[in-house]
Figure 1 (cartoon, rainbow, N blue to C red):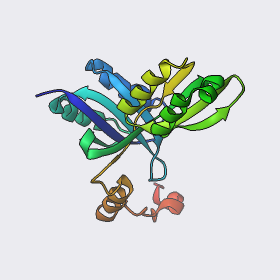
Figure 2: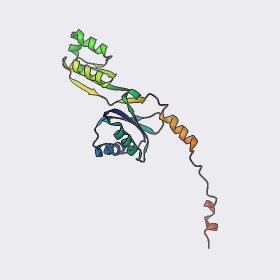
Figure 3: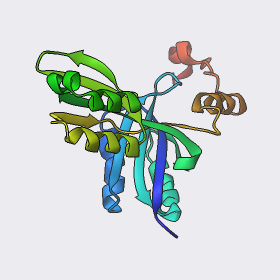
Figure 4: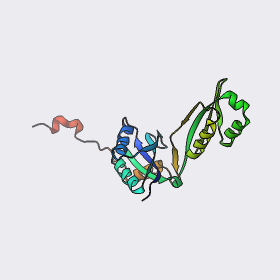
Length: 196
């Protein structure tokens, strides 16, 4: 099997140390995490991890099974890039005088859909979103115009053929509802029940 890029989506409870426990699973298997993002999900109280790795499908499948054994992990999915809609965000700090004096820089920023976030006398910060290749291309082009600073976010992704984890959670609750709490009829009669 050939290695390729996979996006792993985890739905977990929001508990302390979750990132550490999940990253240990990757490090024990000597798998490098290319990108990691955590955020709240569409289901209240449930968090979503988006992890990008470069591996074979067999390894990714086993990895997801291993991750699901963690108590707080509700579900782990893995998808190829064709099966998800994804973006990364980037911020670029460029000298303001270069932006105002050089028409090619302005055209370049427009071409990549970059918009100004902060404009100061000494620098301007632009932000854009796109695929890694687009962000890398803009970074390389801006390097010729005294790029001061650059930062890229982790991948965020939505699975194309998914109706959302919240719907699956509701379906599960309908199929296997939580047991009703049964009141113990002897609870308030302990003196009468437990006497000898």
